[in-house]
Amino acid sequence: MSDENETESTELFSGDEKATQEASFDSIVKPIDRPRGILSPTDRDYLCDLKEYDHHQTELNRQQVIRERITEALRDFDLLWLLLNDSEIDKIVDSFEAEELDTALSSIVAFIYIGLDGDIERLKEVFEQGIYEAANYEVSSRWSGGANEVSVDIDIDRHPDVDKLYNRFKTGEGMRLTPAEIGSLVQAGKLDSQDLEELETTKSKFPSVSSGALERNDNDS
Image 1 (cartoon, rainbow, N blue to C red):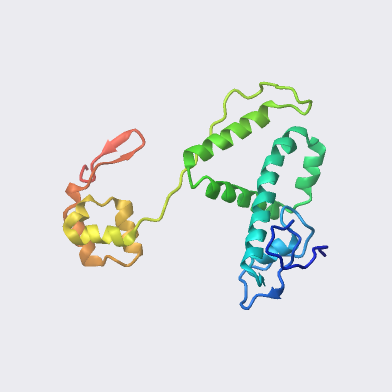
Image 2 (cartoon, rainbow, N blue to C red):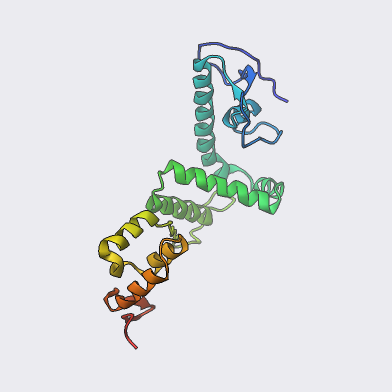
C-alpha cells in the first residue's frame, strides 16, 4: 500500500523508511489498513509496536518525522476551517458513520487535553474561542457577529484516593469525611457495618451539606 523505501541510515530521513523487522511481541493495538493520513502505514505500525528498528537513530528519525507531520497538520487547520468550502466539510463528515465520527472527534479532544497537560481552564478558553470564531465567520469569509458570547463548562469528577481516605478514617478523621467519600470507602470494601455504625454516632459532627439554595445540617429534622 505504501511506496516507502526501506533503509537503515543514521542520517535524518524524510519519513519514508520502513522498519526492517516484525516486532518480537504482540501489540494490543492493530491499525486498520487504510490510505495515508497524517500518519503513514509504517508510522501506524511503529506506534502500535508492530515494527522494530535495527538502529536507535532510525527510530529517533521516525519519531521526529511523526512530530513534524502532526505539527504542520495542526497548523493546516488555520486554513481548513477558514477556506475549505462547507460542502467539502460536509462530504468529509458524511464519509464517517456516526459512531466512528464521534470516536475520531473524541480522540482529537483527548489529544488536545494531553497536549495542554490537563489544563481545564485553558482547554475551556480554546473551545470557547474556536466556537466563537466559527459561529461568527460566514462562508463568504465575512465576520457576521452572530454570536455574542460562548461559554463552555468542563467538570471532571476524579476517583478519590481510597487508601488516603481510609487512612484518614483510621486516624480518627472519619467524622470529617463527606458522604461521597464514605460511599467510596464502602464501594472499595474498606468499611464494614461496624465502621458505619461508628460513623453514624458521629454524624452530628458532619459538615453541613447543601441542596440548591437550602443549606441544612445532617442532624436537622
